[in-house]
Length: 253
Ligand code: URA
Image 1: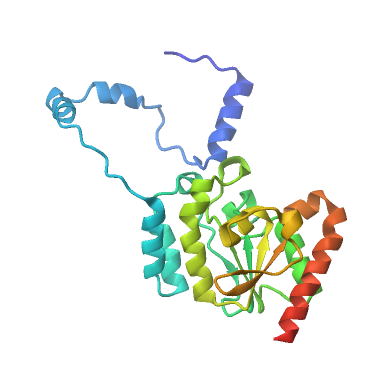
Image 2 (image 1 turned 180 degrees about the vertical axis):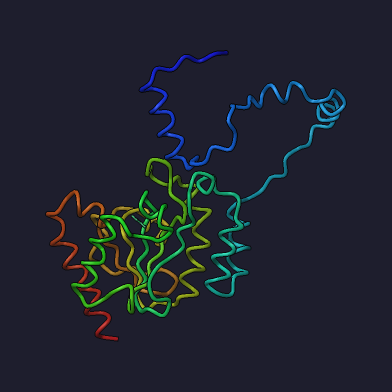
């Protein structure tokens, strides 16, 4: 079937494919893989038809738990994520966004998921929200160079920055938990609802922010996400109060 596309539709389709990560042309002419299938030698097609193979039921959360649990270092955890093939987000992402900052830090910030800038850079919080995060941390004397470690619930960018699905959060949480266990921070900061969901099993950031919670035996401060603060600057006052809580707790012990 011939598709006649006007210039603007063709350009939009191309931009969409680039957005999904298809940045390299690997052939001059398009290949119709449905036709290739139809041209397969008969014997091969018959064998495939005759022996339907029942797909194995795989529980991605159990696989994630097993792989994360076996990782004895941050480098091993990163390798485990590289080898984890059950999260569809990985296929559309340019890079694994593992972490940034100081692995010996007392404070670990847990964000939601990489956006476009983070996906390109392979580092969390490097876009506008990340720059605001850096300024917020600096206001209480912290920096990723020497006192903060940063990771996300999801290490791959969701398409069009959509919200992570519950199944995606569930299968990536074992990796996050292992990440925390390996870094052993004194304090966790949960940025936004997705992070609260993964760490605390509940959402409701407006209600939860500003009060201490607990995850994996560690104090957790839920805070408004910096991306939300960029849209709602009036909430920066609340974020400042939460940062002061963090500073007080750090100074106390
Ligand atoms: N928002 C996040 O939650 N994490 C990032 O890394 C970037 C933006």
